[in-house]
Image (spheres, rainbow, N blue to C red):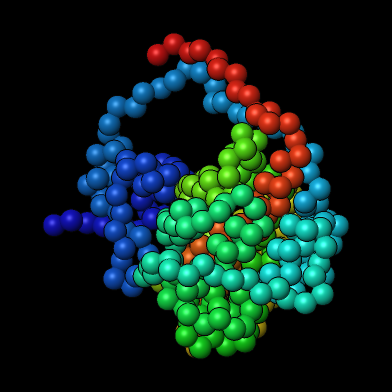
Length: 375
């Protein structure tokens, strides 16, 4: 009889962090199945034990790092907050996502909400995740001209709702996107989704943004550069943080926040949704988005789980909560699947702005230096 354990226990058995566990999944080193509730991930104990006993090849070379210094005017961030084109995200959080995207692309906030047009004839899909976004981007590349980055981004974003089953053509992008999962979403949920899109639209030179700029540096088309960003954000160590936070909340709902946090700390596991390399204190985006989550209708009584986790973490976790926890809470309380790609959809706006900025730099400016090592 096969015995399964949830992700935190699987990570503990392997002696790795949750992001590393999901990296193993993406590389095919370990498999997972979805629990009956359709949310939690389960792992075969026998497979985990077999992986633990395999001989591991050890490299004597130190882990490589790449530091890239790039001048950019798209986003300004520091300990005090985040701004797009010198406008604080606090002042933009209630603006329609379309306007904020246009601000990033054109440096000017439009007076009215632009209408983005979807591309006709794109085959529909049943499940919205990052992989299917790559399928959609590929279809758009094949469907016509692909030399204007903002136009490609507009068509891509506008085509997401109809590609995934929502043929509505009126209303804001956030409303049409939310209806992909909720046929008649409450206003508070649409507002929370819009705020998440705005807050996640850009964050300076994240790994996926760097991938887009590398593609732009060799003069790849806007669509190909977007594929580079999507492929990178699909990685377990970059774009899956909100999923880990969602899984943490699911686990806390079933077993209690204190039990879950105590186990993770005892195993010296990184706790999803806490800590940030840039914001040593609080991630300013966390409070802004959590404020929207707290306004959501909550028929399943999940918001108290979020609050309980925050109280317990405040007493035992030294790091502050970050935007990933707030986004995971939106997925959790708002009834979205764990792999909902709001992060990737939002970041499309920033990628496009960075693509345009990179075109003003000299081509092929990224060079790698190989350091031979013995094997």
